[in-house]
Length: 260
Length: 260
Image (cartoon, rainbow over all chains, first blue to last red):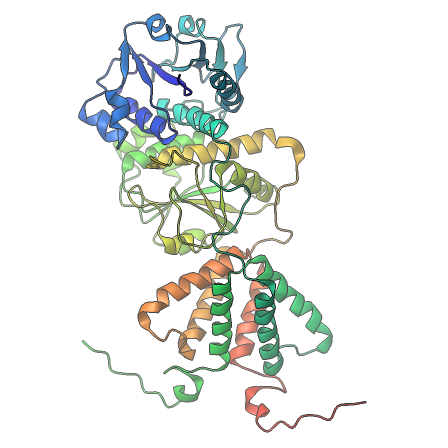
């Protein structure tokens, strides 16, 4: 049983692209790499360097002379192309493909995704053997996409389709717990009291509006308890300076000699 | 008017990655590249070769010494990270980010997406200045993703969000215009200066951490220009009281009789 698709590179011509492809595959938890009639080394220094630590994908790569052999045990094969081809075949996006592929993998189907060479992509004869075509939506005036780049996009979409909750959080939530509301209110009250003392609310009728502005800012920030404490410390420090540069002392202060 | 986000590469160290980034950008119709303190040439043979025919993106790249300068005219900045950081900041997927970003671009907001160096990614101090974090969902046992690969994924999602304009669903966006970054920096500098004077940073070694906390809070709040001005007024008022209840006068102040 294999619940992950195979990646099939047909006639890859640059070692670094095979290496980069291996790295991109492992980034998205794909490990089965098939090479059809490769025109470049895939275990040399260049390939390994680009693979970063994904060497094992390169080392386990299977090599075939023809696409037919590489396709043999696969049930559903997708061709990737950057430009439209004169073939009567369904063309879908990586996102659509990922949904389909995952459904088929869940059904224990063996799936392969096929990428052509750097220069000319897949031959129409190979595409004709594939079930569907995946095309990445690209800037129509610059469709020259790197092999590993198109592979990373397809792998990324498949990973997202497989892992329902990719970042491990259902909804956005802050890392730290948000402070209970009374802590926030304590901060806002302290600020209001100090601003009152300082004469900030010059016109009484402006006070509600200004307070609302401040409440809005600090509630939007969704402060943690620690952050509330920090801001309270900031306010206290601003109104009651206690350090060597305090307002009390600064008039008398002599700039200390710098040590060498 | 600019309806496309800027891509900001912080300390990129390999020419070929800058070239590959330019190609990936143009594949998805992005053209504004900013380089912060690049450690590698971006117009040499290596970079051009990897850019394929996207040389013009390299040629038009703007170069800055610091992130603060690169951020200056931008209103909404996203940091990309591969691994979780110990920062209390919203983390979203490229797909979620793309929806948000498009909504903000439609609102004429200037958006930047920030990528770190190949070796260590973005520094926490840079992330603290960004509004949100984008993390690509990756195979947890192999999260070493190439710089250009993560860039291609983010660009791809943005292209899809822009081109398809999906569903007409109202995405999250702020009602008011977000302040340009230099305004936020002005606020943070004013706060730091005043806290310095007040002796808030008692121990010098704590200063960077405390500053990061404050940067993180205020960047998360996505302040409008008006709000930045309000907060600057708040700080000024706290340190230089000017009203009837000012600290100068409060000692002599007699509690006024309550009216019945």
